[in-house]
Image 1 (tube, rainbow, N blue to C red):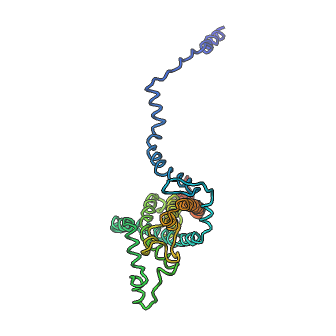
Image 2 (image 1 turned 60 degrees about the vertical axis):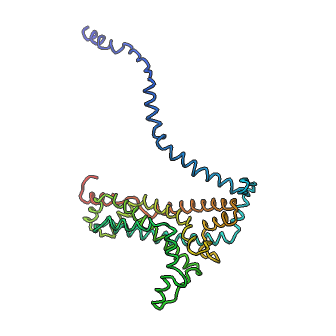
Image 3 (image 1 turned 90 degrees about the vertical axis):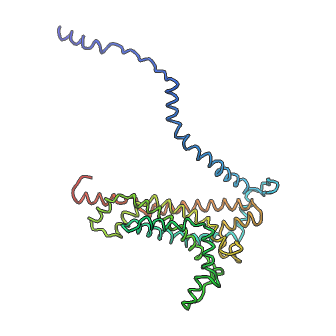
Length: 342
């Protein structure tokens, strides 16, 4: 009896229905606080997208519309012609010459530029005296105006009285036809590009190198890895995101090169026979030389597609060549050897 009563008494409160809690009504201030928490991040970043839509997206779309028309600049109207502007561009021999020259200058500038920037960044990352002075020194060419750089180097690479040919003549060597031979003109223009952009990329890579934890290098030193092995196995894999950024930006800038070939001679039309005619310079000649903005817009979109394709190819190659394991593998191998938990 006692046990039964106890069970009944114990189970009684559990069987009682729990009263329902009344629904909570949020006040306007609470709702405003929730809206602020959800919407404020989008409001903070909205000025950029608004400005981009006005000064970036609208001109892009407007250029795409013009590329399908025979545009009249005076009347600010055009006649729809479909893909005729694109077909005309692709059928011109000057386009293929400009495409060849653009890729030639791009390869002669971007590849040595990236290698030299990596070397400079690795040297600046070491414990040397006057670090700030050397870091600011490599950035000075970037601060210079591109037109000034082009004028200085175009005089240095002059065919008759250029500084470089004068030095070659004093050494008993034959002068180089910098403005007549396509290959040597590409070398001269690529030298201008490398002079201006190598230090800029070196500082970006240096910032990424300094973000690598020093413990990785200490573990590698304990394992007996030399400086080159540490750079190849720790530094280079850790720079993967930064290398992708540098390669993509170098690709965009290299394929859009304009100032250096424009200022390489007095006419600014890419040479008498198109020796250093680039796509952007050809676009400028069509738009502001022939005042045919429909064809110029079509060429701009062709260049955009080329840059997009080359950028995706560079992204795929960079991801395959550069591992992303970095120094973490060195630390784990060291811990495994010592029997410590990971």
